[in-house]
Image 1 (cartoon, rainbow over the protein chains, first blue to last red):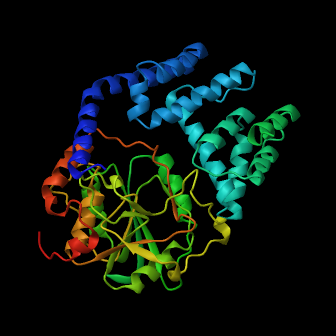
Image 2 (image 1 turned 30 degrees about the vertical axis):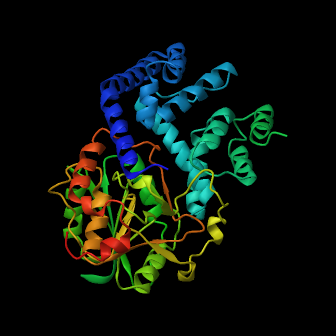
Image 3 (image 1 turned 180 degrees about the vertical axis):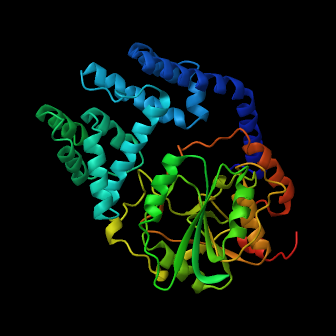
Length: 183
Length: 236
C-alpha cells in the first residue's frame, strides 16, 4: 500500500520529470507544427507521413506524452496516410496549414456528435448539411468514430453512410461496415 | 441578486470550441419563471480574475462556471441543479465530478472519484440520452473538491486571484473556500453523464506544479481530509 509520503514523492518525481523534459517537449511540438505547415503548403505528403514515426518512436514522443493536441494530430496523420495508401481523397485536401486542418477535423467531430446526441431536429440537420458540404472518406469517418470521445451504435454508422452516400462508393460503404462490425 | 436567474460564465480563447459549447447551452431547457444569461471573458489574464469579473457583473443567483470545451448533454440540467440546491440549503456548490477527500499530494484525481463524465468506455452502459431524466431520488454525494470543468454555485465567493494567476488549481482552492465558509459541495449521481469534457485528455502541466505547491502550503492541514473534516473547521 502506498503511503501519503509515497504519493507525495511520486508527484514530486513526476513534476520534476516534466521540468526536465519541458524544453525538448516544446521543441518537438514546434517541429511537428512546422512540418505539417510546410508539408500542407507544399503538398509534400511524404514529410507528413514521416511525422508518424517521429511522434511514435522519435523525439516527438515527448509531445505525445505531455501535449494532448499531439494525439489528435497523430490521428489526422494516420488518417491521411491510410487514405493515400488506398487512393482516397485526402482529409487534408483544401487545408494549407495546421490550423485549417485542425479546424476541419474539429468541425467534422462536432457534427458527428450532434448527429449522435440529437439535441434538436435543427441541430441534426445542420450537422448533416455540414458533413455533406465537407465530406470525408469512409476511412477518416471510421478512424474518428473509433478513436474519439463518442459512443457510436449501428444506427449512427448507418446515418453516416447515408449522409456520405453520394461520395462513398458501394465498396467504401461495405468496408466501412466491415471495419465497424467485424464478423 | 435575482433568485430566478442563471449565469453561464466562461473564460474563452478559442472560438471554435466556444461556439460548439454554446450550441449545447442554447439547447438547454430553462425552467419556467427563470432566465439565463451568458458571460464570456475572452482572453482573461487568468481564470480567477476572469471569473471574479463575471461574478461581479452578474446579478444571477445561480452561476455556472465552466470550461469552453465542456458540452452539456443533460438538457434539463438547470432544473436538476435547482432540485439539488433545494434539497439541502447548506449546499453552496455543485459539480459533475468530485472527490470525497483532499489528496495528500494535492492532485485531486489521485483520490477516489465520484460523479460522472461522458466516457468512451463506461463501466455501465449509459441509458439513451433522449430517455434520461434525473430525479432527486437518484441522489447526490457530498465531496471535498470538484473538478473545475463545471462548477455551479448559489452563493458568490470571490475566487482567489491573489494567489492564483494562472489556469490551474482554482477549482481546488474554491472548493476548500466554500467548505470553510460552511457550505457543502454536492455531486449528483448521473446514470447518463450530464457533460462531456473534450479536454484532449492531457493537461498543460507546465505551471500546474507551481500552483500545487501553493495549494499544499495554504491548505496543508486539510490534506487527506474528507469534506466533513473540513466542514467542521470554521477557520484555517
